[in-house]
Image (cartoon, rainbow, N blue to C red; front, side):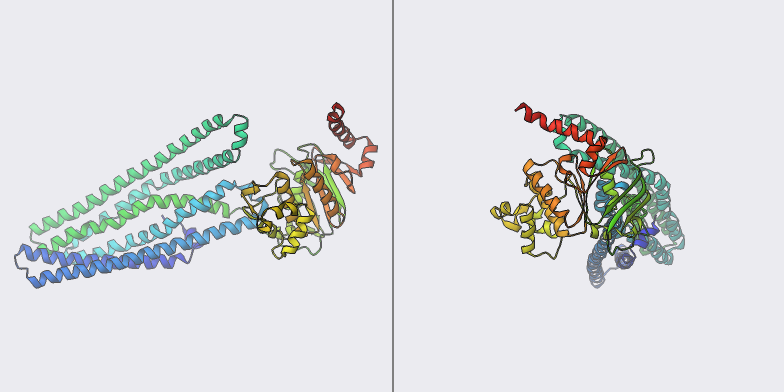
Length: 576
């Protein structure tokens, strides 16, 4: 019922848990003092011997004990908050640092929605585990022993009976634990699966509407939600049934203790004061354990969530990826083979060298492996065969941040964050001055537009949705220029935008290639004509390489692709 690793991961929370248990124990002592005060008072009233002074003493004792309990309960809440705060801070920090270590490859191993769920909902469940369940667990062990010692002074037989009945509650908890663990694991599996589907459908809502597939997706979501509802109801049913069992044990045990105490009183073995004290204290034997039973199901949910968290934290990292690069003068791929899964190989025996200061292009049909090569060069995937050398270092041994210090990747849909233009640009270089920011904005021909708006303080919505496609891409390239790395990879960076923006961006990339090593991936062959070397990728293999003129003279794959594109581009013009 206690997960050892959770305690090890958050060691500082033990202090708050123990202090909380101590305060709860002091509250129990206050209860015991009040019980004995009222027991004495009631016995005096029964014997008609109570006086005004004794009555005032009982009332005064009650007020003092209640006041102390109130102060201690505030302290208990404070300790619970601090324990939960510690857990949330440490675990979320560990998840964040794990994401940084995994880098761009984390999506290969876990869905983004699952990581969001364990970071938010999963960690919240563990806040209850540390803030409520663990203190109650230790207190429920301490309270019956304390009460047993007190009641034993009144009547040992009743004390033993009550103490023996107490373990029946954790016994009932253990009885359902295995079933509960399987059920809650299924619950969390269904929960994360539903989250994946919801996020995907939400992101693709526009596409679903265009193709009028939203109704079909709605039915699929409804079916998944129904499965989740059934699992949730099974969890609730299990919890209610186990609570009913715990109530029967608790009330039955207290009733048995009270019955024995009354019988012993009738026999003259217990005084009336002792009998009243036992009647009032018998419930106290079972309340802590009964409360623990209520927290147990919440704790089980937290432990199920912790399994997901630890499963993520235990994902193997590239332990040897710690090397730094002094100079990335070239990139070499030697006999590189790669596939996203074992059944399907994407790249087959790829050999290619990208020399410093040259302009390269990767071309080929969709699915040929161009973008996969770019992903490998950026360190996104490391489970490849063969070798990739960056300078004199093998890619697998190079730390992710070192790769990004030398290589900048710009895709066709680079992410822009909600905030100002300045904020997004400073991600490229946090030390850049406003003068430098305007300089790169001039280069990407975005400065005039921003001057008409609010300058560098122009606000962007999420993903830059209030900018046009061309403006977003220009801003992304401006941010990449500020990064100032020796190698740039542009993967369809000039696609899906207007012709004017495409021409401007290609003009800028060609200008950059005079100073940097540039690898351009483009489906439009007119954009690669001026490159130093064009590499043709077909079915995961590099089948041709050379300049535009050389490849046309070969009359091979490239020449065929070029001819087809030229015919298509000329088709509309001839019609006019």
